Image (cartoon, rainbow, N blue to C red):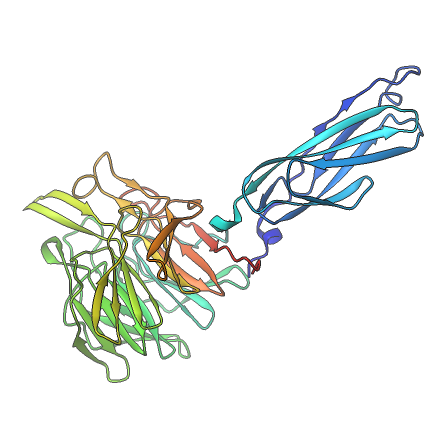
Length: 433
């Protein structure tokens, strides 16, 4: 688990005190002054910091310290205490009043900002070594593999960057056999599988693929497997019971798909499953037990293909497929419509981050990137908003490791805008885990 002190810099906050003049001769050593320093001036709810009260001008007199706070709990006494913040966010004042044996008093206070821990916590991590957008990512052997994508000039890339959450460091793995962006990825049987995507550069005529590539970690190599029945980009791939479900996406001529195909890694074969109720692409998905949750996405309403003209419909749709019953259910929509978002399942809940909103087809002045972070509770069929992303992004990816969600790369503004952002979201846990 990420340590709060490992990722938050130690900040010193000194606040001048209010002094009462002494009755003796004035001078730098005879005017009582008090200041406070804090080991942190930003905390998450339930966090703690250390405060030190510094006194000058006491002229050798004995002093006593009286501490108070507008919230939270103070422990300790004398010139140094610990303050534990309340759970809920806000700005809190911690004060110290000093009294000398001669009856003089002086006070100082420190303001400490507390973030609401129930909304989760975001931290910055080591940036991605290279620009990434519209890539795929998966966790394998406690490392996150970031596969393909678009670079800073819209070129399709084959590189594979590997992130180690335990050491917050990056390395590289063997590149894809062919460069891809907008591919889908899943892990099964200790292997990474990459499905479809686009082999052309950002501004070139689109080339949608059916290829499936499998990564062998032991030999650091890729092999090609049985191609998908349907060529597509911007689909979602999820593993349940050892089989990989590839759902939705976009076909040629900007057609949003309901297509649902299932890959068996052991047999290297494909079958067809019940179609998703709503056609959409740039979707995201995660599974809880035997249920696959497909979130967001969009569909283009095209009036001309050369050049492409039309409108884009963003979606807040949440649909779930139960592998056991082979059936779909429509659930409570997301609080906000968006496509190209990242989704992950943690402790029986679905977390959704970021995404893109197009006002018109292909972008436009009103297009934007969402900072939204939201969580879905299957038990109550309801959503709740969380702490917004530090770096709003679309075309990003979310991978879970030890209960934390790593959101890596993605476009910082609508359209082509790859970033190197690497941030981790820590969901709220009442136990503090």
